[in-house]
Length: 174
Image (cartoon, rainbow, N blue to C red):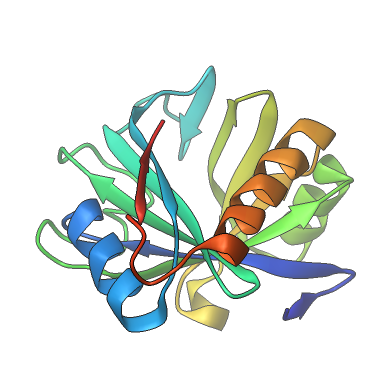
């Protein structure tokens, strides 16, 4: 795993036009998966660049080796961190995810380095913030809290990947 300060990159995320098509392509190419799909994901609290507007997005999470792969599909044209980078029909790398224990301190550190907190949310009892680090890595950096229940979920997905075979279905519906 790549290291970010005292933390490791645990996730690489891509904006895609079709989550299921992307899952099958990655499954065929890398034997990635299985992927858990969270359709039309909703948060408990949300802010995008000072507003509460939340885009309609679906997510898929799975592993390829030691790295979690996230696919994101935005279903509408609401301004978002995804539309900040890509117009409808475009797709590609979006962000690197970092698990952090001291979330507020790490958000302050990123802000002190001059990066804008473009999006912040609370969902599934965990904080996440997306800093606009395109000037450094060509995408955003997600700071993701690491409470035990989330780490357990991620471990379950990683364990499922270790047992995953090329002939297995790579899609798991949430």
